[in-house]
Image (cartoon, rainbow, N blue to C red):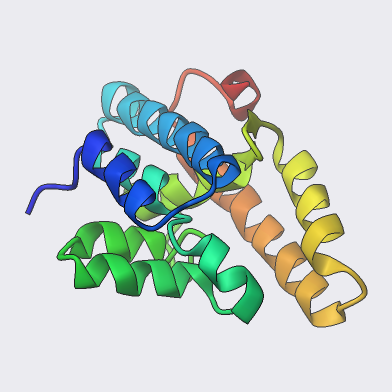
Amino acid sequence: MHPPSPEVCRALLDTYAVPGHIRRHSEEVARLARDLAEGLRRFAGEELDAALVEAGGLLHDIAKATCLDSRSDHAREGGRLLRGLGYEEVAALVERHVAIGAWNAEAAVTEAEVLNYSDKRVRHEEVVTLAERFEDLLARYGGTNGEARARIRHNWRVTADLEKKIFRRLPFGPEDLR
C-alpha cells in the first residue's frame, strides 16, 4: 500500500482535530524529513521512500494532543490509530519517532531514523541544533523528574550518534539544515 498523500494526511489531521501548533510543527518535520531522504538518495545512494517519510512527518504527532491529559504514549497511540486505518508503514515510523529503539550504525539509513532525527531537529516550527532542541525538551518535560531527565539525555546521546550516521556520506552537515 502506498503512503497517504500529503492531502490525505492533512485531512486526517483535520479529522482528528490536531491543533494548529502541532500541525505547523509536523509540516516542518515533514519538510525536513523529505529533504533529508531525498538528499540521502541523491548523494549517498540510500534507498529511502521520501513520500513515506513525508507522510510520517505529517502524521507523527496525530495523537499528541489527545494523549497530553492522559499522559499516554502519543507515539504508540498514533501508531495504533494509523494501523487501524490501514497505514502500517506509516504507523511503524510514528511508533519510533520519540525513541528510535534498536538501530545499526553501519547499516543503511532507514525511514524511521530520518523521521526520528528530523523530529529532534524541529523545536515548535523552527529547525534548531540538537543541543537547542534537547535543552528545550529537558526544560519542558524533564522538570525535577530524574527518570524523565535521564530518558531525555539518553535520547540526546542516541540522536547525536544517529546524526553521525545520517550525515556520514552527505556533502553537507547538520549545521546546513537551518
